[in-house]
Length: 171
View 1 (tube, rainbow, N blue to C red):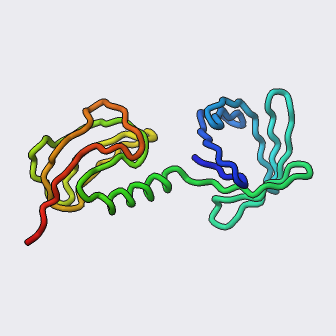
View 2 (spheres, rainbow, N blue to C red):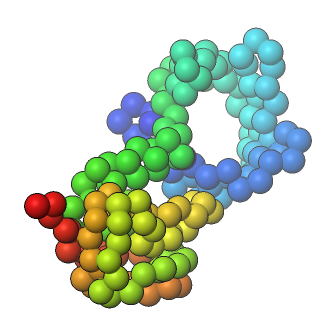
View 3 (cartoon, one colour):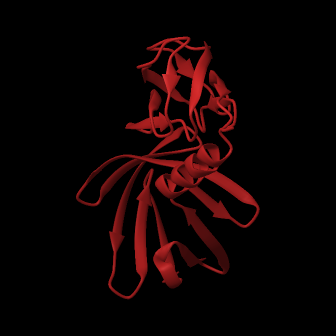
């Protein structure tokens, strides 16, 4: 998930959680912490033998917080990865046109079509795995597969063109 603290954007991944013990990465750097939450919005964080106390005030919707540590305060926004992914996905679907592009880095799991296939709106053209989720990418209009630029098992980057299409114009 992304966490915005002022102008800073951090990529945070929860690796594991067992009781109060939490393993996470922040911008790829691993951290082992012990976190104890109190009902009043305060929490105690132990990291590398150091103790930190923080006050949390949850905003509406539960995706933002005002955090106070000692004499400093921060506004923190949590950008839910799944919501961000689905938003990106919807945008990609709306802009399909004559190509299918990966909305984020991932791995091609399946390509159930071949060059020359005629597809109807809603047909699956490629299956990608990203963030441990598989997603079906469908065409939004009748078309013919012009070119397949990736293969099954291949890793792809965000915005990489996967399949080129010839959209069939209605007469």
